[in-house]
Image 1 (cartoon, rainbow, N blue to C red):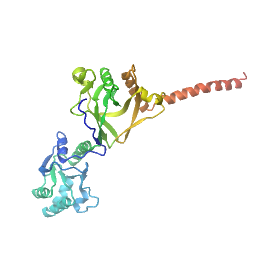
Image 2 (image 1 turned 90 degrees about the horizontal axis):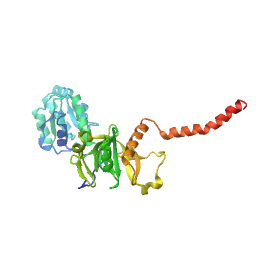
Image 3 (image 1 turned 180 degrees about the vertical axis):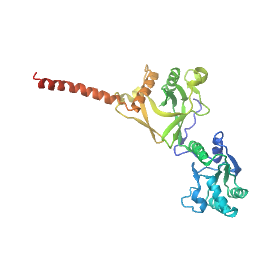
Image 4 (image 1 turned 45 degrees about the vertical axis):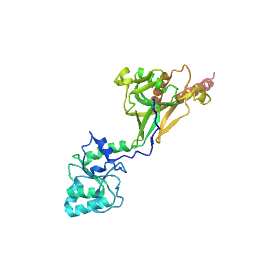
Length: 336
């Protein structure tokens, strides 16, 4: 599409702020900022939640101060048992060791003295009615998505037979036209021209989607910009999907001496540290790229399930080669 910008690479993770966390939590987590409302631009150094535990007792070895600090039932009960003066002292100790983001869970409220200490130290305090367990689960999901390693790639992504496929290759090789042909046969467009890739670190898998600006649009040379859902219906467009296969289009003349005719080579494409199957498709006049991609996806699904056609063919040829020898042995045994 027109107006390309330089691709962004956040392979080590994305830095984000408290404001980003609050905004992304809307609709999932009921959060209220009760101290430090003017510091929404503060960066969350580690996108992980942390139960204070021993740090509240004054033991600070291995204290994960960069994380989101949770204060729930147990923490509030412990602080209350210390008395107001001592609980303030313990909270101040956390602030002195650079902890800057606190969430009171389970409907607990920060006392005015605690809010004052937070304001003076440049910290942020939030409150939620959710239990610590539920908040931890939901917050972890939001934080992981915000901080996930990601990269912006030039390529078109389509969901084919339930498989997320990324088309890569030089301009003019037919990536968008192939995507259009697949869409007409029931596939769904995920992204055209530029695909945003996000890594799920916990499961070591990748997800691809379009940018908000170009979602659902495709550019076809000679036709122009098309809104896919208007032409083919809403089912012809898909949101974020797991990326499982990369198809690289190359001009036939560039790979004619290096074509794998049998499929013995296990070619991989490394994206954000994740190895994906990579199929090289030579492009030349008259080749049915739509049919080739559909077949490649079906073949890859079989291989992923454990089936290897090369092994089966090798075994079949071996048995045929051994057949005359076995027949000769039987004839000798029978005296013929």
